[in-house]
Length: 259
Image: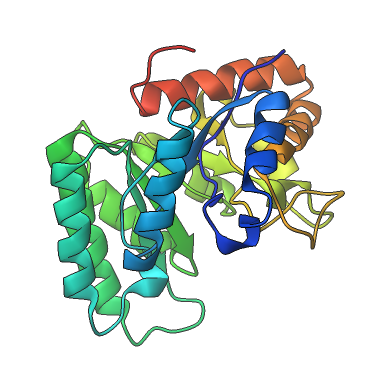
């Protein structure tokens, strides 16, 4: 069976409270060996760590402050992130980034929080997991400014243009491809044809953005092979090739020994 790695899944979310063990087991049965859990804010730390403790071989915690949770108390939230990062054991700084879709009243604070968390990632030699919504240009520019030769990471849920993809790749980061790529009106299959597999990792963003044919329903990590299959079709290669390349990319970026 092919090895898959879900580089972004919120399986600690309350939507999974009634059947989490079954959800994890379905993912493992589908070949999803590792599931990386991004943090959102102080309220998600405990359930995320509890899940990582219950399935340590498969569930890998990350630590960061999501841009949508950058509010009046963002400095307190950042202090908590810093304490956990420097005292605990985490696989990445994330999910962090910029989100100007719903509200731009904290735009400058989001930028400050992102810059600070990138600096922590560089200090700790951890990858960054980047959330971008209506903010691709600002995020890419900040990454370009911070790139000192050792910054690595993933543009989670990539949905940008071919020029965005080129700039991200040139900056040394990877593209996280998820369920959106399977949507009927998505431009990603066409864009992915010209992007080498070396620059791609897989993700679900569960419980959100379920791939076709589950669109609109709760997403889960077991659906990851559906995304790999879409990429394989777009690139006219086998799903095994997609699984192998994307998993190796993930192992490299998280500095994890091969499974």
